[in-house]
Length: 218
Ligand code: BEZ
Image 1 (cartoon, protein in one colour):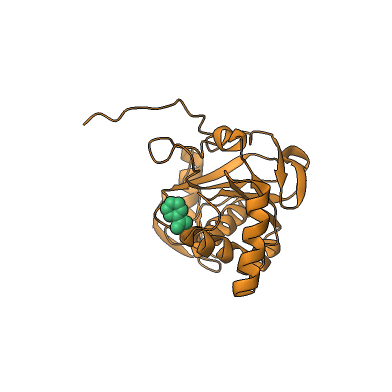
Image 2: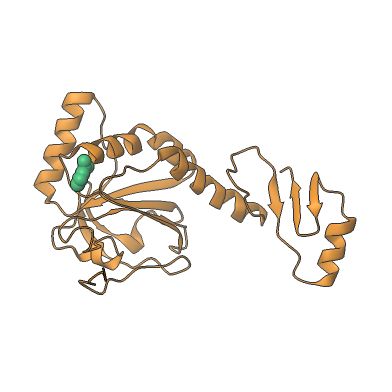
């Protein structure tokens, strides 16, 4: 059956400049372009406060915040809930589990930010944001996007792995193979001309399948 498209949604893409916004958050009012200058930002949405999957996910971000800090990355959550609901939920989870959501959570009650970032996907829900993750680099460019539906929680190991892969790739001008983890060999970018191809053929690399698939240790 043909799917009805309910609304044209802006979907920021990899390589786009992250749309700027001002928002009320659990850490006060924030203007995104002035937030976390010179740092990476992981901006993520969840469907609703006081719901089970969201509570596990937010707790996961909170429990692994030190790992994001170590990668010079600020966390910023979002849902289409009021600031009052956010504050009550943060307090409730802390009281029940001891986990404290120590990062800003946007109260996007007017859906302004959700719509800017394509987090509101009306064929999934007309009132709740999907589970989006935007990896935004220090120049505020979008570098990686994940969208998950309402009924499947994200994987914190993969979020951290992807963030580290982006940073190591940038720092070393290399690409990351399937399932790359810190310490694994990385891929030398494939040659763009005959001279580079010959260099890959003749070069002394740690692992070589052929000129187009060459790996090295960092
Ligand atoms: C949850 O977080 O459990 C949830 C939220 C919205 C819809 C479905 C599940």
